[in-house]
Length: 140
Image (cartoon, rainbow, N blue to C red; front, side, top):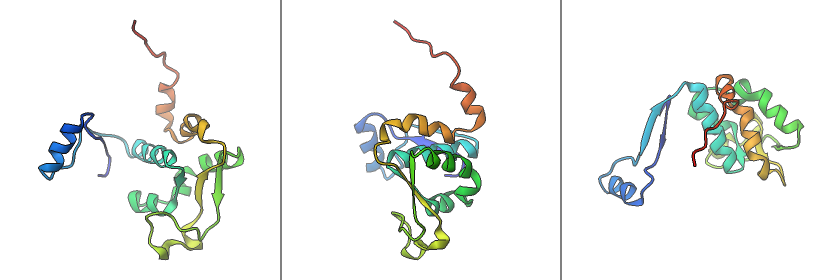
């Protein structure tokens, strides 16, 4: 998938039709800078409570701490993310990866799920943060 991000079709029949044809059901596919794909990946991971280094490195070929260490530290020190000790097996990772070498696994701290929108901003690339300051037009 590299620098692409995709959304499934909005309609169930469109999704089922693609699946029946043996195709990847995608409504929209677009190319993004890798920093944006990484951020989207982490935003999705946060939606499911855990951020783990094994899957991130397998997906991007880079250590999560190297790219997002500052954001992870900020969220951890603010008690929004809880660091689980090395050796905690990450879902979907081979058992051999559950070692001190695998690094920390982060989980949304108890009681912090409602703060998820603000937590996500910690992973936005700088140029994406600027767009958050733009006015949002509303129509009647």
